[in-house]
Length: 183
Image 1 (cartoon, one colour):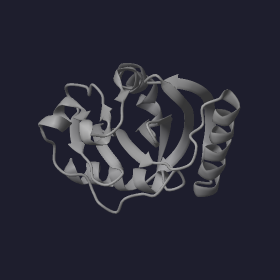
Image 2 (spheres, helix red, strand yellow; image 1 turned 30 degrees about the vertical axis):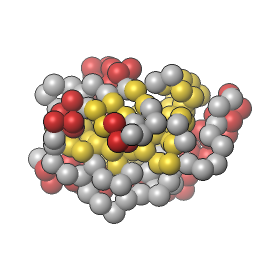
Image 3 (cartoon, one colour; image 1 turned 180 degrees about the vertical axis):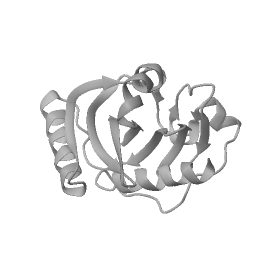
């Protein structure tokens, strides 16, 4: 299980390399903070599913949550440039993210995108089919712009189970998400 979690983290780092600088460091074992989904030093908290393995991360990787072949990776990338706020700025950010994804992965197939609000902040959400570690996955990638950072929540599973996991885990986890200035 730990090898799979580390592989998921490594794959997420590669998948997000276009979104910001990635960390070469890997996830650490779970802690009380990880089990609760509270990461105040990174300005992130969420309610993880009770039966999922949650691990704290290092560097830009805040945490991972995993069960079976379904994974959620939570990232925080500090930003110095002006963060997108308006609908037009969010659409431009979405277009840049989709273009970067297509350049990075020739199998990338966009399903749906939206400029939206998550955790009370401007966000872009991209749902797509792509390959992670050579395996086809359906991905919900959410980019939240707040507190001088881009928070990225990548949630993915195999195509057969994505809809069920998305409804039962991914969307509720996003609804529970809170972002703030890091401590």
